[in-house]
Image (tube, rainbow, N blue to C red; front, side, top):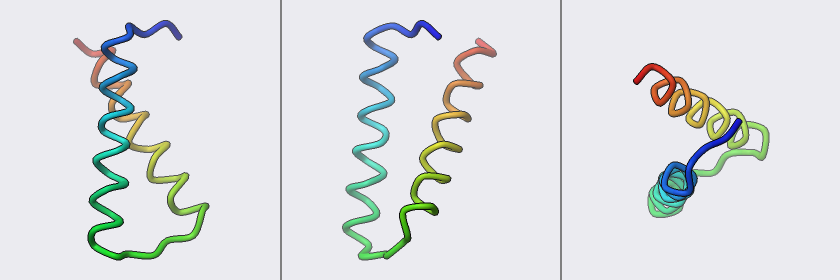
Length: 52
């Protein structure tokens, strides 16, 4: 999978925002739940990018 630097940076920024939001809400999730959410979010983002 080849993605541009801009796409890579956008993914990282989205992940940072998700993590910051979760920390601010004070929610607690185990590692598996976090991994599943991150994986699903990245898959959705990638699928949306491939549709365009």
